[in-house]
Image 1: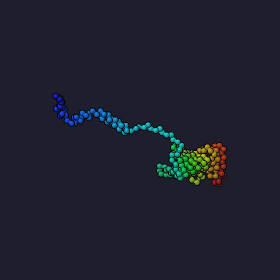
Image 2: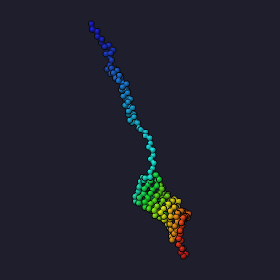
Image 3: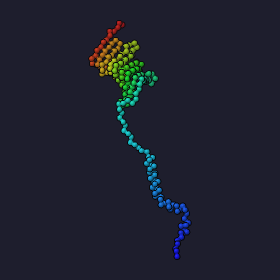
Image 4: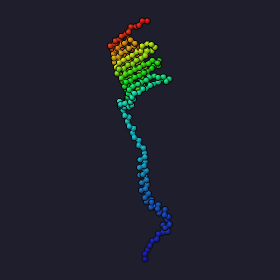
Length: 213
């Protein structure tokens, strides 16, 4: 006699989706681990990196821009011409915020309208052009405040002009000329506002005789 076992009626009645779920649930932990790994990879790939800021590089004494055959003009708030600056070539140095100019020519007007001109082989100006150092055959000519009076001329290998305060200084030999009068000295301090010229060192002067009145 051969004994056989038949599936119970309850087992035969289980639907297909239930049997598929029982088989799939065996692999569910593996699927969850795979999804977790993929999510972690995506998160790492798309998270922005916050890099440490690079330390600021120290400025070097190398020009950051140059100009050739240029002219720069500035005006006062009313639109009146205040100054003009011409040069063959200029170089700006960011570490000192200075402008070096070759073959410079300058014209500037004070609030009263008196003109001052300057020329030199080379000039060094600060950032706002309130101080200009003139090198090499420097010449500064200041018109007289009184119409018809002679202008005042300064010559030397070095002249340092303070534009806002209308002062001129030099620690090198200078020549001061006003009309027919002429002075030479080893150094100079000139204040145009006070009309005072301080000559130091070996001072020599030549005063022209006054004309008939």
